[in-house]
Length: 209
Figure 1 (cartoon, rainbow, N blue to C red):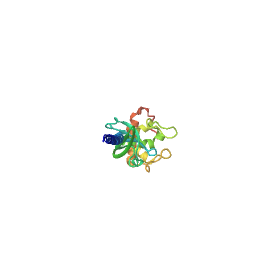
Figure 2: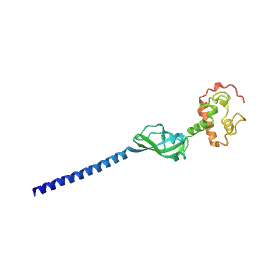
Figure 3: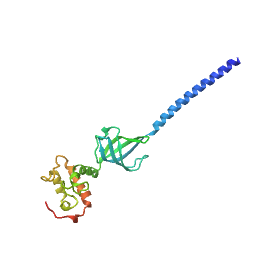
Figure 4: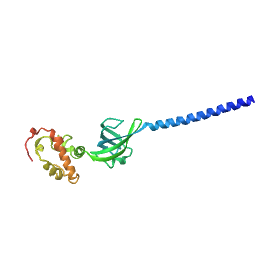
């Protein structure tokens, strides 16, 4: 009887040990899974699109504070799906979500809520005008005149709009078929308010055409 009791006791302890190990193993798996889930964080903020690289699948956003993640700054991050870039453009104001797993952030949602005309106008100038007139309006030799000195400083906004719209003989191409009326007005305002506002009008060498 004593031997039988001892055998039953040993078996009971063994079963309990196996059960305990199994429970600990399941708890460990759940703990690891919970840890992996907790590493994935989603943050939301608002910003202005500054650059889009459709080929690389990245976007640059000048954003406000991202609560719990980072302060306001300009960042370039990849998007989860390149299709997210199809409905937005430089200068758009957007709501966006960024997902971070460990140290790897990725933008998962982008929603246009408005636009920043100054950024949009800069993008138009950079794409259509800078090649001939320079990044800061300084002019490019054998391509385009300076916008920050000489008679260019004394043209009216209406003069600029007409010239950008219709071009000028062999000196400047017309943009009426490439840019909308509003885009032409925006880029002219950018030239006058951002580029020429910093110029010294005393440098005018005479108003000649």
